[in-house]
Amino acid sequence: MEPITAAGGIIVPVPEYFPILQEICNKYGIYLIMDEVVCGFGRTGKFWGFEQFDVDPDMVSMAKGLASSYMPLSSMTFLFLLPWKKGKLNAVKKLLWIFFAKDSAISFFHHFIVELQILFIKFSIQTL
Image (cartoon, rainbow, N blue to C red):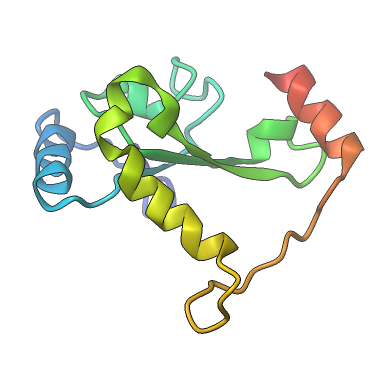
């Protein structure tokens, strides 16, 4: 979910939107994933767009600004390692297990398009 919708017009949510969404996600054990491809890296005045709102996501996706748009690079960050996310650690471990399961009946097949692209990583380190 984008903190501020860009593709449909710059749509800023009402202040109570994210607290209500956060409550629903917590109640039903749903991961709240923030899409920071457009709003991240200071574009809203704070490093992350979601920091403008009262929300605490479980995961954050980012791209474009991660390498200052010089190189194609994206990332999905799991925030479960942060101290206030300890309650969801086991649930996130189960999610990650699907990506790395050896049993083909349950594994999510994937590959990494730009594995080990050191140049891309150097751009992202400079950006951060």
